[in-house]
Image (cartoon, rainbow, N blue to C red; front, side):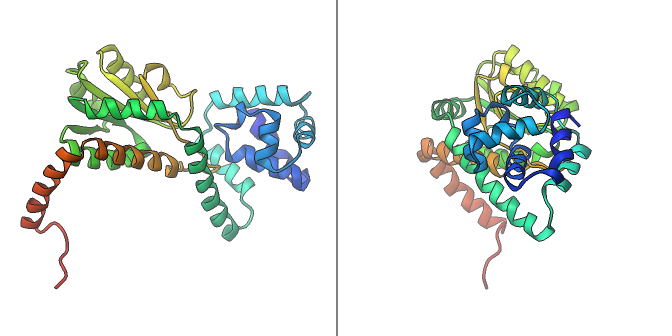
Length: 284
């Protein structure tokens, strides 16, 4: 585990209540805290700025700047699954209490995403999507779950969307990319190499790239024309896709509004097909 998180978890049992609040906030927001000022850290942790500074020195750092530098270095090295599991054991004490804490943290992730949303970038993404000849969604591992949801609704509305989830099939799917296509890369820490390579290739082919990822230090960012960020960090071995999925919901709704006339006709035709094939359960 990276030194700073090792240090925090090793000192948890010796911390005061205020210090533990700071520690829990840091461990629950590993992607964003490296860029917080002392004031921001104090506000989000519910403590004073002096307490934050004392917290840094309590951990053995010369002050907040050195502590912040350690956090920034740590974010560049993604935690392994085992390391994240250990953090969850340290952060969550009581099993029942942990359930509600995780609910609250997911709400916080959505609020944080909404507050920091770049609305200009969001509308640029909508423009690229509605004008795309073809849309390819690149997602691997757990991000496939989010990619499948996005593909289902975009292809239902636009009839031009495909999810590429098999890293060995990327070359065959993408070698005909051109500047009329849009590639949406979905990846969150720990970032998958195949997804990064795929969006890099798309960029080289002249396609527009939309990155949906967790922070501005994501390896997808350098290859994207538009980037949208939503936190997925959680102090456990899983990812929380609550905020990314909320962002994707907003994208789908916005695209639906922009293409309403075309989509309405298409959906009416689909309803007839669905009825013929008995897709949905009917009440007797």
